[in-house]
Image 1: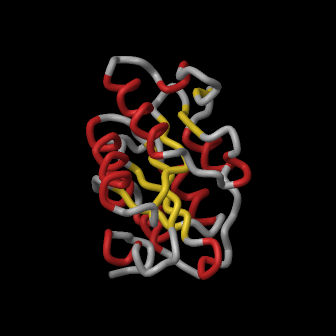
Image 2: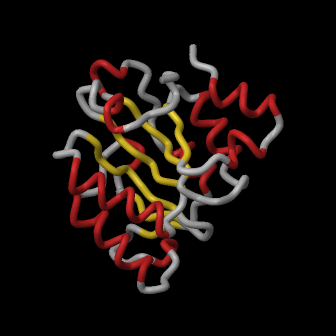
Length: 164
């Protein structure tokens, strides 16, 4: 596989990985639940966002992940028809996907800190700027759908799939 496309097997080759999930619909929530249930803490969720805001650790800038309980709480909160911006206990923030990626600390030495993986679980091209920023900041990117890679111009595909 290309180094920018992460699947369960290649994500596990790092000591740990942190996921930022763009999109909190059915696919994004299912991914978040799978991370909690299947990765035994080797992949942790830093944040999830929908089109209105984000559910993120209060220590996002320090790459402090959400607890498994908070990830499941975010999923339930969203399933109940709420937007993540209004999440209780200070976890909800008015951040778009670009601001969310900008708020995550860079991780240039993955052998020590693990990979940061920005996952596009939306069905929109609106996340392309955030994915481009993620690549520029040294994060891995992947998408649950083909929109950012197939529906965007070739130059966008080239930028999203390049790796240093």
